[in-house]
Image (cartoon, rainbow, N blue to C red; front, side, top):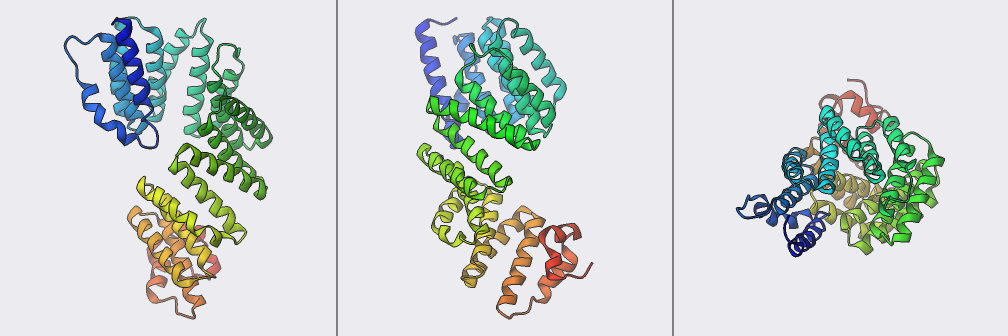
Length: 372
């Protein structure tokens, strides 16, 4: 093991590096070539920490094969020098990334090792159940995910950090919402919010507000949903999370569109478009442009056509047939409102170029389109 002073410096660097792995993860890229190098004279412990950070970087980019490769390197080195808490950190990430990759046998292997470590260590058992629950939730296996979250919630709380309890309640709420257990989901979100407010964890509060907005909208409580999404938006903005704020603006815009008030948000919508474009989130940008075109259809047709063209250009590049169909129908509607013909090109696209199932999903019946 290195000297305590060296470990302290490494831990400080590790903390600063992990702080970069947020919405602007690209800032961490310049460190990666150096962290990958195997240096003579460098202690095994520090080398393993560096490899683990490379794994975390790739995990943040959702490059899970690379994340597994580098995290396994770190895990083997930590095993050599018997640093169990670091081994556990690696195993938790190997479990998560293996589940992402659909390598379930490997994931079972990592989980079995973690449960072995968890004997007499409730915190490790708790984290393992939560990680398994999160991974199953991402695969839409909500019943199985719920079992793991329930097992985690049954573990004695004294040894569990508040932040992990809040994350458990948040993910438990998400799973319950997917299973239509709406009352239980609301209760779980309230527990999560209480924990995160006590910690003054603003970003996590924003996640919960956003989830509560979605849930109340599903329940038809639109004014309550709008309150929650506005709280989420303000909290993301306080944290400097432009992408989170943009998603809130997209959702708030849909609420306003429902009440025919979307035109009041045009200035805010532009900032969301800029954020989505800057992050390469083309689907979200295209969807917001389409919603803007819908909102302006009855107020400024020229502006509606401009938004619609920008939206359609994106969905053509993304090969998104459903939204291309929606764009065609909205264009036909705009042309009709001007007294113009729908035109042979649009009719041909409706009749021939788009799959019939997507036409119905996009609202073809409203235009009395004849069957192909």
